[in-house]
Image 1 (tube, rainbow, N blue to C red):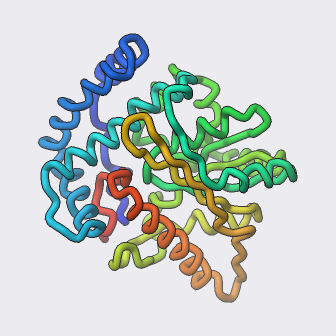
Image 2 (image 1 turned 90 degrees about the vertical axis):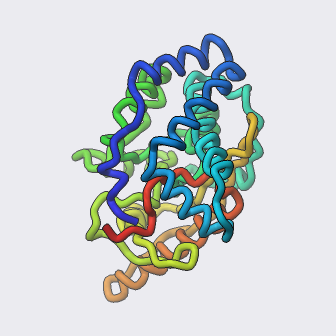
Length: 297
């Protein structure tokens, strides 16, 4: 994985996004989904770098020649999750059929008053998982995100649901780690994405779909410091209004000793990469990383 995602500008315009929000909430989901077709055609044709990255990834997963139909379907899945995000932020959870697997993990820790780290990725929809958590009024959720390269989406989130926007903790802010620890100490949940680099020197090589790729080490360093249980989550979009949410225990605690620290970080990160690959194979059209994940540049 390279740092291309940090340099990649947010596509689209504020007016276009606001128009889509208006159509979605005023005219309904069928009308809004109709607009996704020309939008996806446009991006499939004119976003060359993202198109090549999707083709490369799908070829690794499917092991065959990738057609334009495959590429369009991938864009359409991504656009569908973005559209559904508007409804979830607006509190319209009833629109969706969600199959949740492993929810008892969260319930058990919640009943014991123990905070957990939710470790996710850019596979599928994070918003559907956050919506499930926020539907429980006895559960506090914070999300650790890097938002600097997506200011328009950040503003949409704040305009639709200020309460959700206030749960976001910015990566790199002076008091972020203190807020994370306070949330865990109160028995809350903190969501982290484990598949994006922020600093190139904080990486380790892991085997991912048969080839070495760079994964961030900061995630495992952070979880070891916080000494909290780590639960993997994946919110897979299954077409139409259907989602499938998976929770599974990653570790009761990530422990790193000083003598073998780098080796253990690599082993924990490889374990994460293996589970990410497993779920990518379950839903390859849900991998929403539109840049060359294996690039060394």
